[in-house]
Image 1 (cartoon, helix red, strand yellow):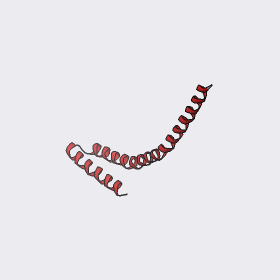
Image 2 (tube, one colour):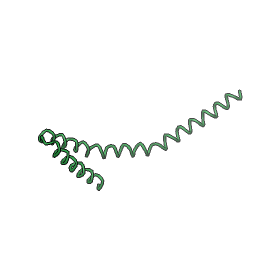
Image 3 (cartoon, helix red, strand yellow):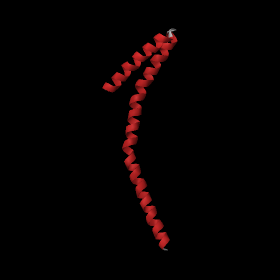
Image 4 (cartoon, helix red, strand yellow):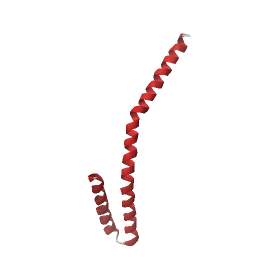
Length: 81
């Protein structure tokens, strides 16, 4: 009988700790979801522009230079917003 009480108390403590942990992680999950969304849109645009450059330009060195410029342009705007 004593062991059952101890197990029940331990189970209740673990359930509370699990609930508290889930609650503590919620702001982190919201932050990650927000940052993921904010980065995904500009990065997809960036990747699309780079792919267009690859289709149109044959000079690989020029593509890399322009791709770096475009990446810096979009990242600067993302940081400033």
